Amino acid sequence: MTEFVLVPGMWLGGWAWDAVAAPLRSAGHAVTALSLDLAATATLDAHTAQIAAAVESSAAPVVLVAHSYGGFPARAAVERLGSRVSRVVYVESGPMPDGSVQADFQGPEARALAERSVVDGLLPPPSFDPADDPALFAGLSEAAPHIRAHAVPHPWSTATAALRVRSLEQPPTDLVCSTIPEPAVREMIAAGHPYFAGLDRRDYRIHALPTGHWPMFSRPADLAAILAAG
Image (cartoon, rainbow, N blue to C red):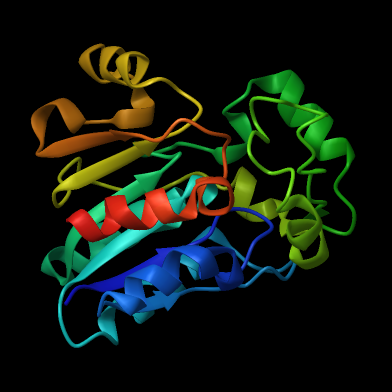
């Protein structure tokens, strides 16, 4: 039996993991699906503390799974938790280096566009409609209405805060790659790309799961199988 702590990305809560958590629990694993604080006053440090508290409340070392933005506070939490995390799984994310900022990933124009949509410190959810971006939202045609009904605006301050970590050391690390092909990820790691800082010096595995950016909705059974395989 493995204990999992699942961390969602932006706009989502623990509910986003329902279709992944169910088969894991059926197989006898313990699953905690976190809902991060999405108030406008939330901070990256507060999200890190939430993750750390969830892991520390487990009776045994956990497998920490983080999607997209969730990889930022998870990365910081792993540094605090040490041996409390037996494995970390970054889903459409990676072990970012010190100083990384979520809002900067797609460049200054994309950041400025997002910032113009912020209302009262909160970034509205995207459409999740494959017609708007076939690659990003691939596989979401059926799930999109459910996602839109539950997704909420995300605190912009957490997306613009710089990640603060000191060490490149991590526990065994898995990457689940959906929108970036596995060969491209391996090339980025070999080149020392900051998205995957230090992986070339650590125990890591890559799992290709071709779909859109949200495999917990588009391929939940396959994602659960990857997690359960250990």
